[in-house]
Amino acid sequence: MDFSLPLRKIIHVDMDAFYASVEQHDNPALKGKPIAVGGQHRGVVAAASYEARKYGVRSAMPSKTAKEKCPHLIFVPPRFARYKEISKKIREIFYEYTDLVEPLSLDEAYLDVTENKKGMESANLIAKEIRQKIFEQTGLTASAGISVNKFLAKVASDINKPNGQKTIHPDKMEHFLEELPVEKFYGVGKVTANKMFSLGIYKGKDLKKRSLEDLVRLFGKSGKHYYNVVRGIHTSEVKPHRIQKSVAVERTFFEDLLDEQQISEKLESLAEEIHQRLQKNNILGRTLTLKIKYKDFSLFTRSITREDYFSSPEQYYNTGKKLWELRPFDKAVRLLGLSLSQLNTEEKKQVSVQLKIPFEEFENE
Image 1 (cartoon, helix red, strand yellow):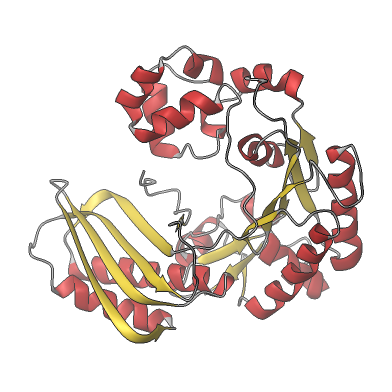
Image 2 (cartoon, rainbow, N blue to C red):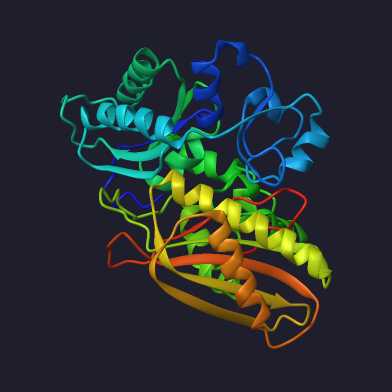
C-alpha cells in the first residue's frame, strides 16, 4: 500500500436483493418464498430473492431457465415507480452524512465520509447507523463495505451479505488483497478469471508476483488496473454527479448461432434487458446500436438514430431486427449486443453500463 496517497473513508452501500426484497416487504405472503421480479414468459429475471438464489436463479437469467431451475418460482411484475420511491428515501439518509454520494443504480452507492456532516470519526459506525436507518424507514436490509478506496469498499460490501458489513483497515489491506481469490476482485469476470487460472493466478498474491509489463501484455489496459488494485492503489474519487452516457448489454455464446429464430429470441431478450435497465435508472435514448461479432471474430456495428426517444422493448427489438437485416455477412455469430446512446443525460465522460449475463453464457470482456 502506498501510504503517500491520501487515506479516505469510503463506504459502499448495497441493498440486499432490492427489487425482490421490496416485493416481499410489500406483500408478506411472498416472505420466505423464492420469487423472481421480471416477465414469466419471454422476459428475463430482473432480481431474485435469496430463497430463489439457492436454486441458482440469478438476475439477467432468461425466465424459462429460472423456472427450470426452480419449478415453484413465483414471478412478480416489476414496479419501478415503487423502487424509485424507496431509493429516494435511502439516498436522503445518505445525504444526512455527506454530499459526496455516487449512486451506481437505485440500490447501491459510494459515500465518501472522510469529512462528514455528523463529525463522526468512525466510518464503520456511520455505515451501521445508515443501515439501521434504512431498516427503520423502509423495512429493508442493506450491506456495506468500508475501506480507503472505492475498489476495496465494493469488494468488502459483498463479504458479509446479506444484512452485514465489512471493514478493511489500512493495516490489514495488504494481507486481505493477497489472500483474496481473483474471481472476487471487482471487475474480474468469468472469462478473465479463467484466463488467470490458466496462468496459475488464483489469489491476489499470485497476481502481485506479475510485473506491470507482464499484466499489460496479458490483459491490455486492464492489466495496469489489476497491478494497482492488488497493491491497494485505486485513486478514483467518489463522483456525486456521475451520469451515464450509454447503456449496453451483450452476450457471447457457448455455441455460435446461425439459426434465424435463435437470433430473434436473443435480440428479444437483449431488448427486454436493456429496457429494464433504462427504466431502473429513468433513462431514455435516441440512438440504438447493434453489435455483431462473428465466428471469425470480425466485428459489425450499425446504428439508427430517432428524432424521439426509444421507450419500449418492442421498439428496441424491432429496430435491432432492422439493423440485423443490414448485416453484410451470413456467418455464424458468437456475440450479439445492443447499446443505447444520445441519452437524456449530460456528462462529459463516457460511462458504459454492462449488465450481468446468464451464467450459461460467457461474460464478454
